[in-house]
Image (cartoon, rainbow, N blue to C red; front, side, top):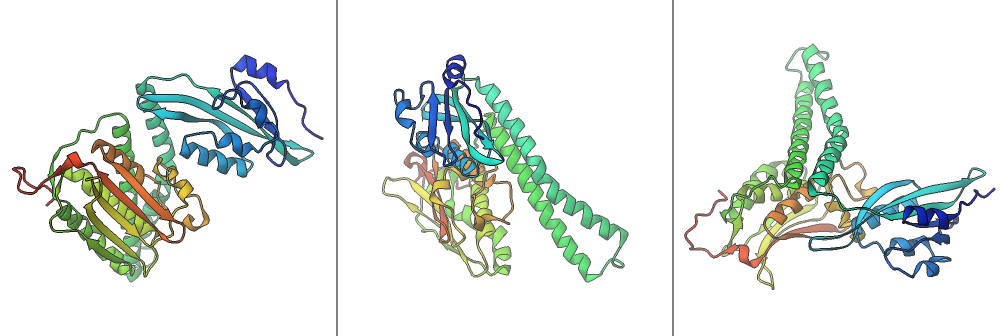
Length: 369
């Protein structure tokens, strides 16, 4: 039995919204109201696929999330996105979709797209912080349980007196979990501060080669133990960057940690740098890891979002490294360029604009030691 149909036209006029309904094959069978992304096009949408409606959403990350949920016949509750963003704003909308069932079988989807009134920046910042704190709690719980569990085993000497070789293995696990926890907390606080506009950059002339050397020392031994080769290609005459040395080191550490999580033994990570055709400077971390579907590249720059495909399963982490890096690059007036193919590896480039480069020999000292 097919579900009863409400009067969509009445609802759309009351809600100032666009409503639609599909059949089990996700073909649009009815719609009402003015389609906000292409006024006058609602009549032509009937009889076409739902993906035609989703394709009009210009927010790539939201479009990807909606597509994934729709394909899984899952409910969407007030997912917010910005349509046609421009400097200073854009139009905000919310979309909700409800799966329909008849006689226990999937019968289609019913959805609504409605405009959202703009809110003050302070309200948005508070919401982002609240969401971050709520979302991080699950990621904190897993390493904390490992820390507490292994610590209790050692404290009670369950397997024998201290000095038993297995205790050294547990201590290694405790250290790994602790580092994981600290990294997540630091990233969470960084994003909260940057969203609130509370981060100030301490600018100076930063020696890129020295910054790269400083982060290599942190990761080199661990990668070598896993059988992952680490190469560098940094020209000796590379100009310095007018920026924050600590921010640059954090960005490089984030990119190296991200690559290391997705590269198997026998793989390779390469850090390179050089001037680009437009005069900017790029610092690239490339790996031979599992790669990312090109359609998900915008998606992975959102906090707590990771590539959504089978190869990524089992690779932990809250998905904060790239969002933190993007936010730090925004402070440097640059951008993050990601190129990747599933199964072939990923290249992430930090692109600093030409006016951020400092020729060697200028008065400022180089600060990346």
